Image (cartoon, rainbow, N blue to C red; front, side, top):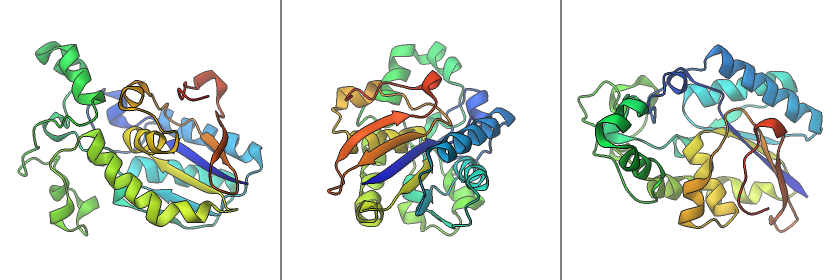
Length: 237
């Protein structure tokens, strides 16, 4: 038996401003820090010993994980991987979601946000919001930095990383991943075998640990959100 714990970062400054964030490297709000603290407390109460920690390259996910580790009194280092980054929202990056809905219509914005393989227009490489102009990604090869992504694109990088770096470690060991709404949605699609229609309806709450119990063959036995007041339906249990 083993456990995989998935935590979407706490509220970020751009979550608060209702902006498309993607690869822009913003930090947590005070509420986001409190959400991370609560996540850490809830995980501590489970008495699950974490063997490996993973996060994206992004500050909001990294700082969420650091707060959790502090509460768990864990000195383990964590692996940072660009493959766990949030979806790149292309030309939508930095725009307010409500204003965009008024401008091009709620239905079109919803399709871009929730469809499986639709990509927004590419973000100009001259934009300060493009990853090539953000210090966080300065060590990444520019050839692999996207200008825009669909959920399908995000899924492919997340699952490739999961299969090569995480899956086999789940044999009798426990892993915690601090990541983002869309990278966690991608992983849930894979783990729970969700259809394209089902994944479009899946919401991932900020700062609420999803604990997935696995058997010795790394098959799902059960799952639950630790904060019951902010849980979401995974469409499978």
